[in-house]
Image (cartoon, rainbow over all chains, first blue to last red; front, side, top):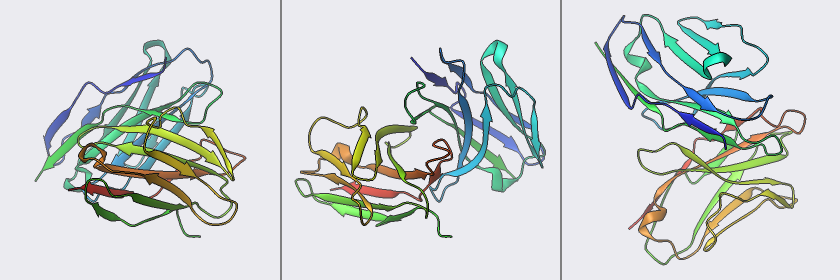
Length: 115
Length: 114
């Protein structure tokens, strides 16, 4: 069965520190997608990235970067030079079994960035 | 192009009442999904619908919960005889037929049962 584990429940950093949020997944599918979402205190879900299982290239978008390692079933998310506005809960998600379109979410990591 | 619209944003119901949550998908999106987020937890899939069809309801509680996506109008998640444990944030997402994982989430409805 599909599963997403975000072992870090809460992380606190000081502004300008780099921080990495871990995501480990389990799936028997050979084709799947991985996602990261941000949920700020206002509560909405903000899409950050979607990655196809066949594309193992790391991705960088401004201060955000993602490291996809199929060998360890991990899809980690790094924020460089963190800012107070990065404070949020971050969710990693995995597509469900091949014949459904649902997402399996991890339990989230709450990131607090202090000034 | 408006995003996924959910209303109401906040809903308060007394135990035993009915709750109706509405979701209007993005224009051109024919797939609708409902997820529930209990306090301090991640999102859990509830149901996947296409116009007039329930495709996957494996995450729906067996009783009191129902969902529809009629030919005209928004998708509705209906909770009958609400209990305190139904208090949660309910998120709707939609995706286009050509990219079923191209999710766009709405801002959610926060249901509080008092």
